Length: 214
Image (tube, rainbow, N blue to C red):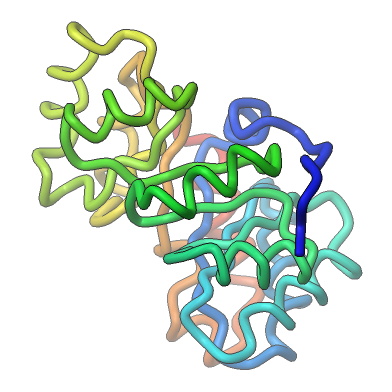
């Protein structure tokens, strides 16, 4: 369906715009626009909508059309079909929990701003062989947290990371202090209970605090 490279910002450029990327699992399409606006108002402009719900692509479309100043990405891509759906919805960057061969090659061939997940040095080497330098370190806390990323910096100095998984407002700064960490992913600023309650004011307040963590 997409047989020509896309012209888009690189994943490096997009990640540099962020301190924290909210990882959003949206259950109701009508929440997408007020949620996006609340986060952007708080200073978080790079937003990842996971493809874990039936309304995810519709949420991407609505945010892309109606939330000024936001860069909207799609997360939890598992295969090329997910990449197709996310691109059709208008996503500007694409995040996967792993480094699957077919998905990774399709994303590279299309010139997509792609952030694959890695957990080991072997996976990082595979990514480097394919020309990638930016990775989602996932699940970060379970894999050893900041100590693990600090250890990777010596043998793999070209790698840059967005750690995700178990990141909280309390521990995010220990990741952001590392030279090989560009930004982190997290859910605390837009937790499901706040979204269910449509507490956009509190989400904005949490976003404001998160935007200045570095």
